[in-house]
Structure formats: C-alpha cells, structure tokens
Length: 132
Image 1 (tube, helix red, strand yellow):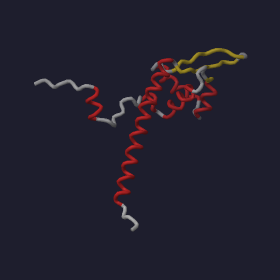
Image 2 (tube, helix red, strand yellow):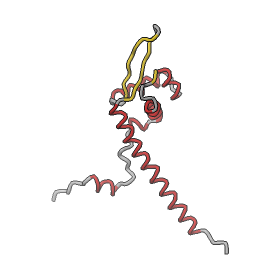
Image 3 (cartoon, helix red, strand yellow):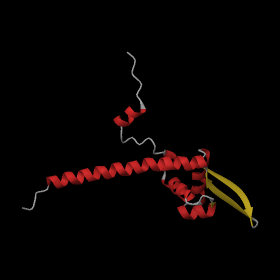
C-alpha cells in the first residue's frame, strides 16, 4: 500500500512549532543585524557605516556579506569617492521579500510563545490558594 502524500496544511498541524520560515541564512545574529540595517536604509550603506552599525570587524562583515550576496539577498557595488574606494551595500528586492517573510515567521514564534506564557500563567493562578 502506497503512503498518501502529506499536504502542507497537514504538515503544519502535525508540527506547528517547526517554523520552516526561519531562514538559516538570515537567522544568524550578524546577518540579521546587517539586513535590518539595510532595510532601514533603502538607498544602501557604505561598508564602513554598516560595519559600525553592526559592531563587526572588516573580516566578519565581508564574510557575512559574501554569504548574503551568494544568496541574492544583498548586492555590493564598488566605486571611488574623493579618490577613496567606496563599497556600497544594498538589500535586493528579492532579499527584501525574503526578509519580510522571515519576520512574519518570527512574529508567529513570538505570538506562540506569548500564548503559551499566558496559558501557563493562567494555570499557575488556578493552582494558587485563594485568600479567603
């Protein structure tokens, strides 16, 4: 007997806390900071400004940008300004979409945790003796 294929809605009900939308590329702390910085600066940020905003070293920022570029989430352009090299970093349109989808999943995590916390607090109140 063949196994019946599992529909996505069934998978969600079977594992409601799997959070498949938590994108591992974005979820890393430094990359999350980089993307948040770039989302708030749609025209882009210089490498130096991004480094300062995210408290990263040149090497760390460069490595994380390489990962994000390889995924098509950010783009960097190199130029010269006042006879000095300038690297400008921007989030791409698909990167922006992917980031928003990630945040939507993260918001669900927060809602689930808050609901669980509220349920637990209600259960604890039910167990506490009344002051009669």
